[in-house]
Image 1 (cartoon, rainbow, N blue to C red):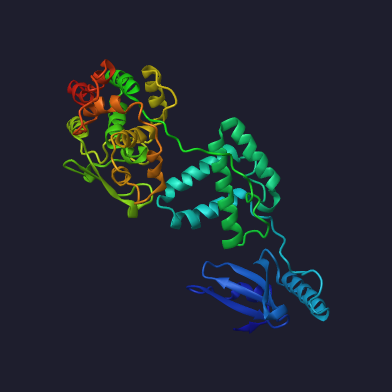
Image 2 (cartoon, rainbow, N blue to C red):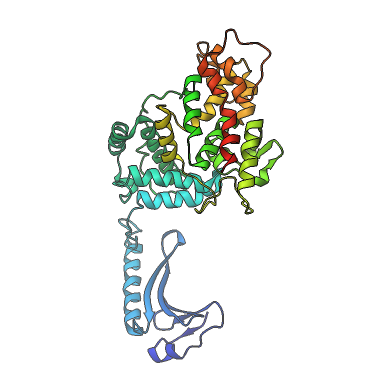
Length: 422
């Protein structure tokens, strides 16, 4: 590398390289160097070998903001400091250690989302959105604190508070998220050397949800859907009920994935490797046909929307209003999926069959819950109303169908009759 006598005048005359950068060394102070970038920036820096022959680098500033004499003076000072430390056998505190702020929880999460979730999640955008929402909603008071400044006492207090105010299930999920962020930050990225404060916290006991619609509730739901003015909501509920598919899959149902009475779900929970096909019952086919006729434009999705995804994603508010009119309590959208599986279990279908219809992996523990459902009480009622769901069985009903069960048969006509005048 070229060596010249640094002076303000000489530096100002040095040519700017067409690409990359060039470096010059000062004849009077060998530890002082000058870098000239292709954008015209001229920067002084100091570079010397430290312990174990590792380079120690310091940026001294840009010329002409810092003069040559000032840069040479600072370089000599740094050289003297290094020489004194070397004579001491590099013992004591490192005089060149850079003091920096610890990584905050929010900064760690941003890196975690960018590096970990982006490459290891089946649906990276959805995974990041869910975790970021939890972080902002429940951990805003911890977000800007350094990772090594959050203790297990803080996490325990957060767990208790969220459990009391928002529910035990979400409280457990918040701790699980914090545990994952810390685990990745400590073991993978070495952002901090503290212990994981989210480890060792006992979760609140949780039980698998078993809620599903019984025949009486199904009848009330029918009546509410019959009077429902929101066609999108009505069709969404019926398709969820008739297919047993997940909320997100029904919301993002695309026309290109529907071939006759087969719906191919290309990227369900678990990613593309978990893709599966749904056999669409006649009732679902009728609903889809009516929607296709009504949506004259070449829509991509069955439930097109104006948001970023291109389809409707939020049903919570309208679904809650529907349930109020139907006088049905404690029902989630996911319980419509469970209703399909629970009725299948009540009719004696095997767990592999139920799992296949739901897109579960063979032997999935998610399917095994239906083996424990106590559906014997409603078995006769279910068998009397399965025709309303489009299913047939060889066994005749044990008794005469009650009126409510007969009324439930009208569910099949909701999609057809209600869309006739839409």
